Length: 180
Image 1 (cartoon, rainbow, N blue to C red):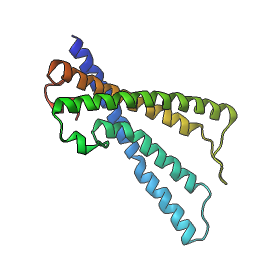
Image 2: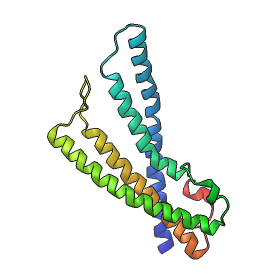
Image 3: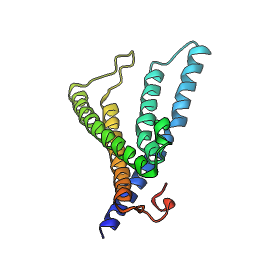
Image 4: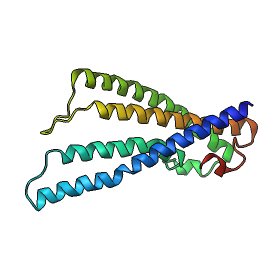
């Protein structure tokens, strides 16, 4: 029963993070279009719009931050290979558990600070210091959400690896069962 609860949590997080990551990736063509439009307007028509730089900056931040949990899910983050490739699978799990714990600690602080900045930006109408001066609250909200999902993904990975370390078996019978 306990194993099934852990599996359900992992499956839920995998689905949510996949949905979020694919949603973030769908912003890439919009980002390219905004940059293309701004470039054409600037260099062909000599009339750069004031909104393209800030919009591209926001979209890039959205893609990078919201894609972080998805990159973690797919194990595309960086390891120190000089150590990681030379150790046994059990030691790799221990390295991962330490990394996940540090990441969770860091992300909890980031989420707390981002929520604080979101509230300030909303209450005080913080704006980006540019000619267009768009509001900043949505950016801090997005970073809060992405930090929460990244934390959920790290907790999910920590649960799976800890289960493997303690029992000697994978939480899922096959690697494809959990979406990886």
